[in-house]
Length: 375
Image 1 (cartoon, one colour):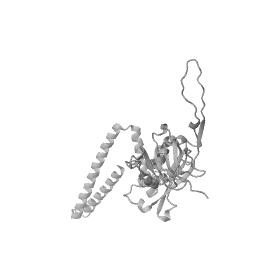
Image 2: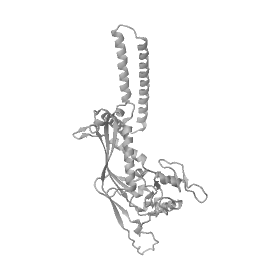
Image 3: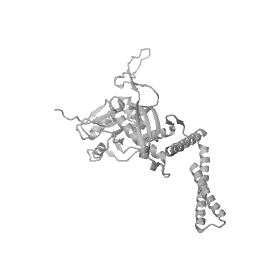
Image 4: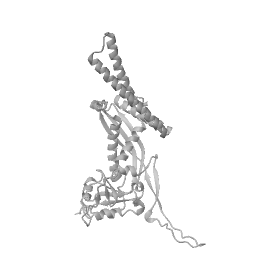
C-alpha cells in the first residue's frame, strides 16, 4: 500500500509538470504530451482501483483476524520495509547504536523459518531457547525395570527401579555471512528482504544439517554419538535388508514421525534396490520436503550426509522430535556497510548460538559402512 501511494504521488508530480509547462508557455498539449498525459492518468486510475481492492481486502481480514494479529502483521511490515531501506541507503527508522544498527527480530525469525523449510531435521527436532546450560532429564530405557503386573488385594506391589539420566546443552557461536552486490541492492525490481533471507537461510541450513548429522569435535555432537548401529557388509554399497534392520532398530513407540536421512549418492544406490520380486523398494512419490518412501517411511536427502565409503555413517533413521534436542539462544542479524565498500558490496551476517545432542538414544539408529581392512 505504501509503495503504491508513493508511486501515485510521483505520477501526480509528472502530471503537474506537464500542466505547468503548457500553462507557462500558454499553449495546448503537444501530441506527445497528450499521449503521456493519457498514459499517466491510466496508471493512476489503475493504482486507485488496486488500492480500493486492497482496502476492501483488509476490511474482510479484520472480520476474521483478531486485532492483536493485525497489529503484529502491520508491525512486521514496517520492520521489513525499514530493513530494506537500511540495506539500500543506510538510512531508515531502524534504531541506531554505537555499534551499528538494531536489526528487527522479524528478519532473524524469517531466516529461521527458511531453515525449517529446508531441513526437516531442524524443523522436527525439539528446540529450546533458554540461556545458560540446559540439562534435559530422560529415562534410561535400556535399564528401565518399571512394569505393570497383576496385583492381589491387601498384598504389596513389588517395587521396580529406573535410572534417570540427563543431557547437557550449552552453546556454540557460529556466523553466516552473505555479501550482496550494491548494483543488485540498487535495483528497484528485487525483493531485497526475500533475497537476503534466502541467501542466509540456505547457508545456515547447510551448516546446521552438517552439525546435526556429523557434529564437530569439542563442539556440537548432533547425531554423531548414536549408539544403535547397523553395520553394512560392504564399504561402499547398501542393501535392502540393512535398511530394514535399521528401521526396526527403533521401537514402535518411536516409529510415528521417523524418517531416513542420506546423501544423494546413497539415495541413488537405494533407488536401484529391488525386492525378491524384482520390484523397486523405493516409492518415488514426494511428500512435503521428502524425496519419497522406503518401507513406508520418508527419505530426506541432504548433501551434508556422508558418502558411501569405508567406516562412514551413511544413513540415519530417526524420530527427530524424540531423538534430537537443539538449544538455540541467539538468532541475530548485522549489516556490514563499510567493511565491503571497496568491493561495491554490503555484508549481512546471521549470528547463531546453538548446541545439539541426542536426548534419547532409543529414537535414532545409524547405518555404518564396513571398515577398511587394516594391515
